[in-house]
Length: 253
Image 1: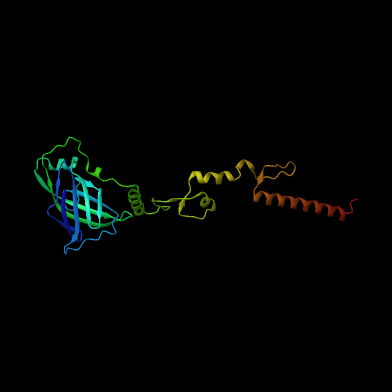
Image 2: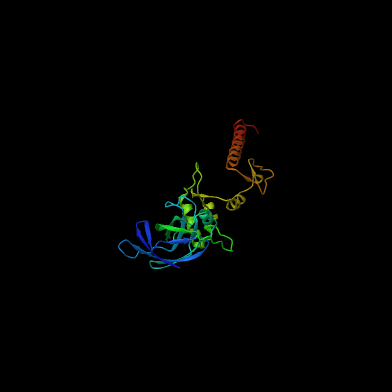
């Protein structure tokens, strides 16, 4: 077990004594976080921690080892890190030791980064080949369902909403919202659209002609058909009246 103090100055930090990561071994590190003035670093906002070991300060190269098996008691962290990884073995091949960097990140309950510290570490190659198969660095990062949900939510928040001219995220309308037909920001699925379509009269039950002689009991006319029928009936009636008046005025018996 290693016991170190991580002295922070913003995101940059250093450890005392030097932090040594040994290839081929799972090790426990007890790390105390404090500022350059010796004040304990507050970890109240942190819900979960994550540690990554990389070749360089800016983590531009892939992980060599990583873990989120970290417990905290105020500013004292207990870290379990597996150094027996394919990436660590490949980087230290032919070397007795090399410099690397540790990046410690703290996340709040929503999955946002609220703390980050980077410090140099010594990567030690003891020439030990464990009997167990080497893992991959990312295998040390195991997330809870809540953490996974938070990460997906963060990705979703970063994607713009869909519009008529550009793709993006969009919510689905409920059956009630589809029926109301007023929400312009949600999409309708076939499942919610089908009942609305079924509720409409099929085309076979519609007619543009009114048959007054043999009317149908299951046909529905349009407004235009009703108007045309009424206008025709009125015209016919007026013609009949006019003919009757002509007959009376002409004195035809």
